[in-house]
Length: 158
Image (cartoon, rainbow, N blue to C red; front, side, top):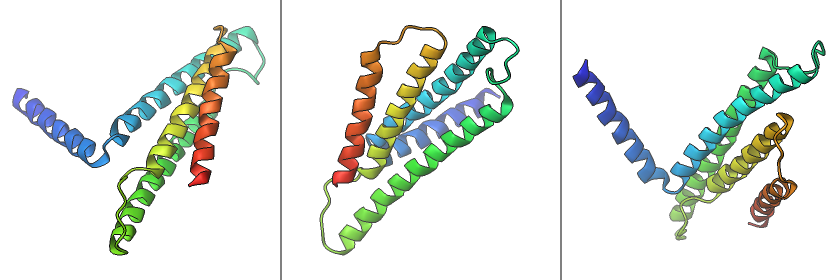
């Protein structure tokens, strides 16, 4: 049993090293995005529970499985769009190479999409905290929204 666990750890370490080599800066960004997605999901559930306590008997408030499933599917959609950005980066690099152009960046669209979704998750987490009754500085929400907007603008300029 101990040997199989060690082999699994070595295999996972190899996969992580390979992905890190292939994706570069995008690898830790994707890890951060996945972590924030989980945090957002749980803060959303906590916020819904808080609202249900504050509004007993009102079916418009509270957590239900349909809302939870919709949230999970939305996050799966985030990952699909992120994957599309990564594939687009690869296609642009290969096409440019075939046409004789040298592109010095191997990550652009995937990184922009990932950063945009990270900011989206941060906004959602701060909104959830506010729904739970935590005081959220307005400047923080505004700053995250401005950064998200700048990424939108940067992506449309290119």
